[in-house]
Image (cartoon, helix red, strand yellow):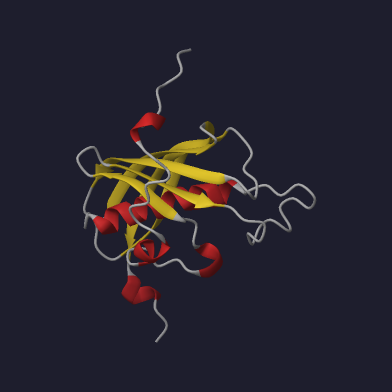
Length: 166
């Protein structure tokens, strides 16, 4: 079986070229505190619908103490959450969808490596399809240019007026 090429070659982006820091990401993403899973955006190509961001993982990640004791590993669901936050950032930044974007589903997700505190978790995301209320993106996640997670996610516009506490 032939290995498929990455969404974007590593030579196409520079992790040291931050184009959106955490404050800029917060302009578009609602997640805060422990649920913020992006540190920076370093590549944004609206012509090809590709965005690259990363999360620098520290020793105090909320999951590090309990997953797994003595051998902290980033949970796969948090890897997928980081990819979803990157896709959400992209869709809001480029005004592709209105309202708050939430998870609509995951498909073909594979975990291929371990991610630990101290790692830089890099996410590459490409928009595949966009409808008024649903977007579909493929994503790949890397540590030191090694693929650790990949899959396809769906983002959906959430009915925020039905979710808020009154």
